[in-house]
Length: 352
Ligand code: UDP
Image (tube, rainbow, N blue to C red; front, side, top):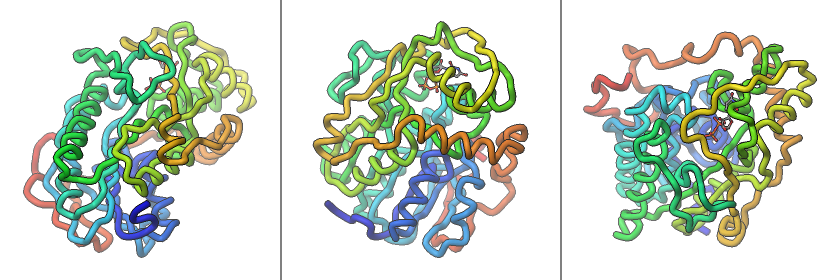
């Protein structure tokens, strides 16, 4: 065990769905958090409750640009990336750069600070898997030029880069392969199945199921996923380590579940299945249990109850969508007293 509950942590992508929950837990356990985000898919709203906290700073910057953190860090959690298929297909180059340049920058930062780097990778590195459930030893089945490749290959490259730094003993690293995660703060228009099904059910619109809905996913409640990431941060294991739920469900079953659970009378509408959509996905978490002592605890009913409560509370926000709190390019890219320099790179045209 190392650095448990101590020191300042950088969370790239900290204003996103998963990142903001990680920031919450780090602050809660007494650590100082610098949250770096360009708000491309993250939202200030997700961390608004932390903005006045003395141990939290929001640093508006793009992880692919040049930036520095001027206070000592003990850990860097690198999450910054679009993560939902519609988002990363809308931001293809940005996604590739977050995985490549962004990971390089996160590693550079970790190296300078002698900090541990936790790469938040993805089950997408397994592509449309031929092995089930997926163990970390499986190399995957990824279309390198398909529509999902911008995310899959970026994360695969990120893993390779991180492992190279590990082999060269340049940085203390840990790779987490995070499987489907859900919970409060998912954007209503994020495009993934759970926020889609919930917003559709709550508004009485048909739930859009792709293909025949027999493809499977194993969905993990966000609090469990975050606990796994923290445990990997506190550990010395390089990974990769799968972090995900064992509750494998068909997409159609999940749609029925969300509809019934929310008391909705929406219909189910079958729509075209996206290209390269994985047929099955379920992690083998033997390694997470053995090396981290981690396994998920929140059952689907409980996680869905909490998620639904969040979406119902924000029902008015459902219609407004994202973008309201995206960064204003003319706004100064510093706030909350973070000692940092967002240097030269900020002017690059492709990132606001
Ligand atoms: N999906 C669906 N309806 C939707 C959105 C997604 O049936 O409105 C399907 C999608 O085709 C996939 C599964 O749900 O088979 C999970 O998709 P998601 O976008 O949540 O994440 P993925 O696991 O594919 O990255």
